[in-house]
Structures are given as C-alpha cells and as structure tokens.
Length: 287
Ligand SMILES: Nc1ncnc2c1ncn2[C@@H]1O[C@H](COP(=O)(O)OP(=O)(O)OP(=O)(O)O)[C@@H](O)[C@H]1O
Image (cartoon, rainbow, N blue to C red; front, top):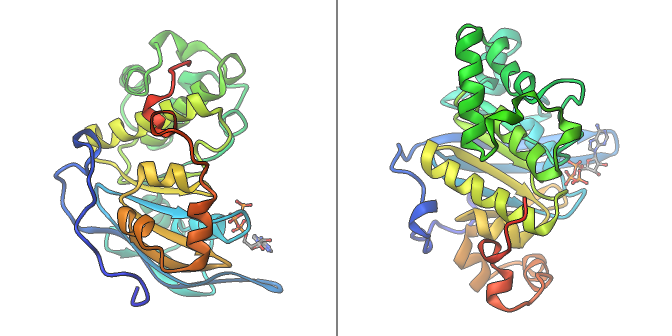
C-alpha cells in the first residue's frame, strides 16, 4: 500500500449512497499477492484494503489480471505468494470446510446475466439454492425469503416460477443479485456485473446496487474495465495495469490529479457527453 496515495476525506456522496454507519473496519485485506501462470505473472505484488460498508472500485482493461485477482480474493485460487485476510482470518491458510465457511460470507455477481444462471431451474430454485445448501430455515421459511429477496431487487414475486430464459438480461442480473445477497454476505464482489447489459438497464442495476448497499450495509468490491461506471459506484478506486495496482486514490482525487499516464488515458477515454445524459441516474428506466 505504500505506493498508493494517502487517504483523503471521503469525496462528496449523495446521502442515499454513502456507506452506512457500520463499523469502519477492514473487511478484506490483500498483502503482496502474486499469481504466476506458466509464462505469465497475472497478479504482481498487489496489496489492497476494503473497509466494511464501502465500495472499493478496481478498474483495468481486459487481460490486466482483474479476474485472477478477484479469484485470489475470493479464495478460489491459491496465490503464488502473499496473503488474503477476510474478516480477520487468513484465507490463504484455510482449506476444505473452513474455507467454505468463510466463502459463505463473500458472494459474487458475474458478467453474463443469463449464462450465470441455470436455465433449467426456476427463479425460486436459483435464489433458494444457497439457502438450501446452508440449511437456512425450512422450505416455507426459504420460500418466504425468496419472495422477500425478489422484492428487494425490484422483481414481482410472481417471477419466482419463471425460468431465466423468460427474463431480460437486466432481470436475470437482478436474480443474480438476489442470490448473492440471500445469505446476508459481508462482501459482494461485482465482477463486470453490468458490462453485458444495455446502458439504460445498466443504470437501473447500478442504482439498485447502491440502494441495497444503503439498506443492507453491504460491502462491494466493484470490478470493471469501465472507469465511468466505477466512478459512479466507488469512492475509492484502484487502477490495475499489467498485473499491478499502479495507482489508488479517492475518486475525486484520482480524476482531478491522476498520477499515472495510464490512468489519464482511461479518464480521457470516457466519452464526453452532456452531464445529464452521462449520469447513470438520468437515463430512462426501461426494464
Ligand atoms: N488459468 C490460466 N492459465 C494461464 N494464464 C492465465 C490463466 N488465467 C489467466 N491467465 C492470464 O493471466 C492474465 C490476466 O488474466 P485475467 O483473466 O485475470 O485478466 P482480466 O483483467 O480479468 O481480463 P478479462 O476481463 O479479459 O478476463 C492474462 O494474460 C491471461 O491470459
């Protein structure tokens, strides 16, 4: 972390998206993470800290190592070197049941809204699966929770009997989010979670994520190649390039005074359109 900027005061936030007044403690900390594949160092000495109740943004172009880093942070890959601490426990030391127990508290929403859902299952079965796997209540309680989750993500409870193929991309992503928050996770990793959906629906999903965070006190690791989207979501942003975090700063500081040429390139690549049209919340609601 020493090469990163020092923390400045939180940038301006609209009240409804500010981190809830939950403990301001470190939920996830990576230290010196390295991941080598044959012939490639995909992740190179990455250190980062994610605090409870906040959104940490990770931006970088395709191939920079974001997915590998995400897999390391989720304990899905064992690093070549370095450590990951989650809720005070070193994930990198855990195996088997202990690791699965920790993973229950970290959920992920992936890019492909339709492909990441089992198309042969109903929405109720998809959202109810983590509840069933972790024995969260009896059948009736789980069904009630599914309805509650559908309402939380803005879908009618009548959608419980539908299949993913009967839903739009945005609706599928709402189901993925419902599934991810079903077990009250501490951390939700959003890995290119809005990259595959159309722009108008993207805005709705981003706003949904923000209101869920405010309501439930969730912590997000928001990973995307799209700096405009990361800026909308994350008060703290790390820029990843060729396996390294080359710059990290509070959002406003990063945009006002990018330290690295690469960061400047990403900022310059954001299309310049009239402010109202550019703001995700100003886009038309269509799904
Ligand atoms: N299992 C693997 N074996 C070998 N090389 C890998 C493996 N996984 C990733 N890599 C390599 O590591 C580098 C980083 O890949 P990674 O998928 O983490 O990047 P990314 O930023 O997530 O890109 P994308 O968004 O396109 O998935 C790439 O050069 C990739 O080819």
